[in-house]
Image (cartoon, one colour):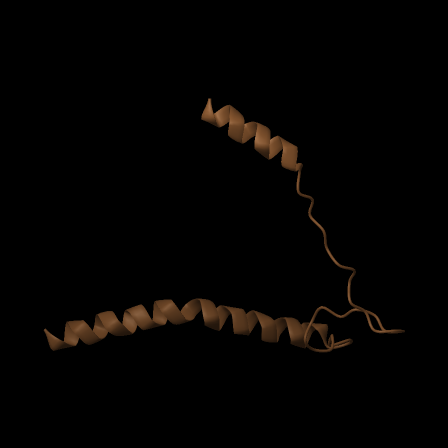
Length: 76
């Protein structure tokens, strides 16, 4: 009984809709989603730098675990 009362009250309130505001753009300029300028002709160098950055970030936990394992093995 209580569930039907709750269901009816929820149905009376109506469905909430999702609303967004318009995209903020300055007059006469395109929207840029990157915090830096795209490299233009230097795409290979840019790709290399991004790849190295991501690889180093991915490797840090593995290097740290190897270091910790070697450190603990030397103390025993």
